[in-house]
Length: 324
Image (cartoon, rainbow, N blue to C red; front, side, top):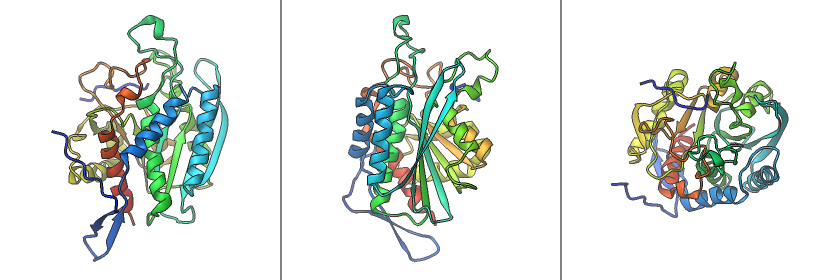
């Protein structure tokens, strides 16, 4: 289920208006790395939250999907929408849409970035019983990951990377059951991802690796080495965490084992065969492993911090633009 299993002074941010540069170790080639704009990413998160809860089968969900498609097309991406009627654990038919944005689709070498964009229909973790049937606004749980990816997409449109990049916003991730006694409860989550893994947007699709963003906007967030990521793609965890350490973001990217979570990356690993990792906030001091606002009515913009968005986005930009 979507819950952690027990496996076990902020740096100054110098945002240049010009791309940063890196030199490769084996050749004298300068790599231009665009600056990640945390204000822009924050505004993308805010825009999603302004629609309201993006629960499938609602007008807010439809409006947000249209926003994603038009925005990504405006950035120059080749955009594919993948619509499917998916049946949830409670029998509800979810009218889901996965949104795929491809940059340089002609390139064979590809990197996959993904996040879920829907929000949970019920705040079933809220401490107040009267709130537990209300939908979750999902500022951090949903909008933060897609907000970072929208800003990366904006930069990719202006500054092409040397490899192809596919960005997928997966739907119907958060309509799973928390009843661990229910048969196949883990598979009740991440329905849009499971559908895509069985029906990829391109025949024979493969990427060198994949990176999932989930809950990446909280103030002073901590991203431990998630255990399914370690099992399936430890070398990618090493790549990302090393890059974060080199950039001075060690207070966010904790180089220690965290929990293991059944999240979108598990199905991309198991069903699509793409080695993938999860960058996800892990709080070892809570019962769930997540922030206290998780799956409550309080997952709002107060849980979004530009410094965290900057750390995650800048780390990913450096990873992407150093691929060749």
